[in-house]
Image (tube, rainbow, N blue to C red; front, top):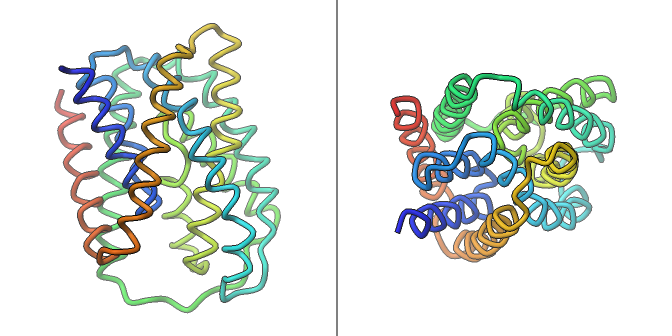
Length: 246
């Protein structure tokens, strides 16, 4: 029963990713808090699971950039830096006390939810010029390392940063979804080489995330986007509070 419930929560996380681009931070709490898996095992499987949703996001990036309302942004420095940062973060996961990792995941979940609530109340800001290569590298490295440490795909960290910097919404969402691929590749490779990746669990997580992302994208076309983001924000805050207290 606990595995079924954890699977349902991972599916819900995928739906949140498909509908709002955030929600991946729910995966590790579902695998540890519900299924009872060790934090390191859950993070490795979660990182691998984001390979599939990352491939989906990578396919959407060129079209979203073309539809953006600002000059074209070359995202490759950010994605390469995220690749390197994720490799370093994956190596650190098993060197950091599990309690500290749990607190980091809880803070990330609650902080992402609070940031989403803030964006819902904030009037749209004027778009700013694209980031330069150095800024993209610094942001990518930080997002890659933080995502690998928490077992998240990247959007939950990258999207708030891009929104705060005033970049256009559509290309920012696409870039945040696409960054899942380099982060998942680097983190999964590091976990696999260290013999810490449960391939069966990782594939199951990936399949649930992909199915949820497809369903979430379909739902987003029919439901009010603001209400979807509000529901996701509240779920993230609740997850952070519960996960920090267990």
